[in-house]
Each structure stands twice: as C-alpha cells, then as structure tokens.
Length: 306
Image (cartoon, rainbow, N blue to C red):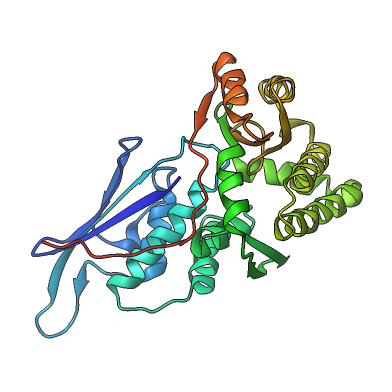
C-alpha cells in the first residue's frame, strides 16, 4: 500500500500550499520561517522546512515560485502500516530530487525520521522509514537511532506463498502511535524479557524466510504478538482479540499487530489455500480486508511528462 507525494513548482506566484487529497486538509503560507505546526499537515510542513526549498530564489533579479505539495495514501488513516514514515520518505525524496540532491535510501530514511523526532518532537522508531526507503523484505539491526539494513533474498516460491497466504485486516482506527510509544517507554524497565523476545522473534522470522519455512515464520509472528501485548494493556483491543479468535478458527497459523497497536491493522498468515476463509471471518466481524502484496522497490521518484 503506497503513499504518493506530488510536488509542483510554478514560477511567477509566491508561497507554499500543502494538501491532503485523502482528508481534504490544506495549509498555505508565504514564508517557511512564519509557518506554524498546528496539527494540520505538520509532517509535510516539517519536510518542506528541512529541505530548505524557498518560494523566492535570490540574486539580482529574484524569481518568485509557488510550491504545491499534495499527498494521498492507499492505507486507511492510523492503520499502523507506517504511512506517516512513507509520507516523510516520499516528501523528502521528491524535494531532494527537485533540488538535485542525490541521497541514498539510508540518508533519506534518516532525514525522514528526524522530521518526527527533532522537528515535531514525537516518539518515533526508525524501522518504518528504512522499510519505506529500501522496500523489499529486510532484516534490521537497530541501535537507535541508527540501523543496519540487510535485504533478504526471498525465493520466488516463498514470496508467492506469502502473498497468497497473507491477510491484512483493518480493525479500526488506532491510537496515536507516539502516545503509545510513550506508554511503552514509561514501563520499559519492567519488560526486558518481552523486548528480548521481540528480538528473538525477528531473528526467528529471518531464519524461517531464508529456510522457506512458513510454519516457522507463523510461529515467529505469534511470538512477536505475545511479547508485544505484554508491553502495555492498550496495545491490543477487544476488536483485535475477537479477530484473533475468529482467524484461528478459520485456519490462521500466524497473527500480529502492525505498528504500535491499539487498533489499526493486523497481519494474519493463513494456512495454505486458507486465506479466503480467514478473509470471510474478518468481513463477518465488519472489518476491512486490504491488499497484502510485497513491495520490491522502495522509494520511487519520477518526473511526469507534459
């Protein structure tokens, strides 16, 4: 599920216009230095400010520019799918390309993460930004705020099997992820064993995928979800618990929440040829089943013709 950022620069007028095509939010200002973070498209504002793009180029004969940035996303709002990170990466990628800055995926991910932690003062991990920038399936070693990204060379059979057996379900709007992170951080000292289990689950998942063993991968998903739920009572919801039970009854083998939890989406691994039954179980609970395809390219930036 992709997030799209469109950048248009027109000479003659002056100022900035930011728009969300999903929520119909809009923010306009003449000067980045007078821009306010007020809860309306703040991440886009931070990207524009950090990029250094200006609405007037200096010199003896200044050139005025009207800069328009539009965003839309395939993912529902607050879905836990990393859409804010994807927005940051896409915005920084578009702005960098316009300014002829050549940034590696690692650099784009890091700059995008700083939008949230430094510019907006939010609690934010790093894995979502790296996932959006690199694409594909990766194993990451995180020493916050740094991360080493190791792409996993999935066999064609395993990738096809995952796409056929994954079921992505939107259970309802999630809590604000930064707030959930704060709750977890406040109790982190009590949960060392759970964090250790989360790390073991990641290693087990990597080993399973490289071994083409999706039963072991399902076990790693379940290990992750068990440890994640232990971090704070708000990470799961009655809706997520109902879906978990219904999915298991329909033949699911793996289950975990995406993102910070507290609602949003879950990823389910169905048994072979069992995804249709799991989808029906989710829909009977009134939940939305989303496409569950694996991206292979990460950030893409292009200039439209015409």
